[in-house]
Length: 278
Image 1: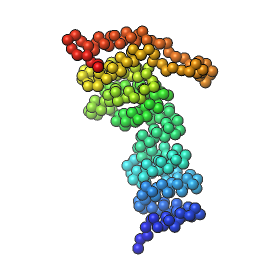
Image 2 (image 1 turned 135 degrees about the vertical axis):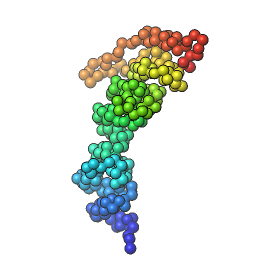
Image 3 (image 1 turned 180 degrees about the vertical axis):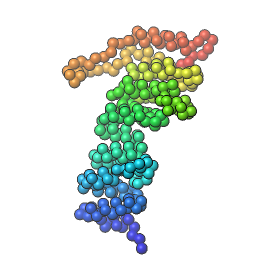
Image 4 (image 1 turned 135 degrees about the horizontal axis):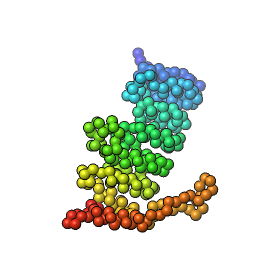
């Protein structure tokens, strides 16, 4: 007959038999009989035993193993959650990378270990569609640390002429272009970067894009930014930099922005036509 795994596991739940439990759970994974609960138990055994070599062997991928094949070996999301909860972030990063879980990889880099430079490099290297999805989710964190780089990336994703050569050659690249309003939430605390992004995105629009239904929303946001008294956040009087100096705030350009507002209003409301803003 065949003994149910749950029966065997119950026999090994005594803390003194945790090694036996780990061996049994390893056998279940080797035989492709493990469930997500078994993966959770096995990884908890490794972390409680502080058996880092076994944990490393478990998450390591074979040479040439595809992300799809790697993900079939165990429940990837379970492994990520257990490793992160136990503080094994490097192992979690390895799992996310091997499994092609881009958003998990960025989440760990940004929220757990704070490696913004590495997260930016990873995001910049992602395929177009994956980069769009990840940027919408984690761009708000990154833009605080890398405003110019994230602004440039948003512009690239919105304008087909800025796509990589491989993306332009794929025939469907233009259809995958993002719309600027998809990224405005990223800049909620960075109005100056938002202004730069929207201005450059509008300048790079082709004829078809200028007829888009979302264009009035972009013009409305630009007008709002142009007439705002200041684009810089208010800082407490006692604010200082790490060097003990008052932080430098760019010289306000309110008058110049008001001039841009007037030009935009005039240009987007042609005589005899309708306004391209609300």
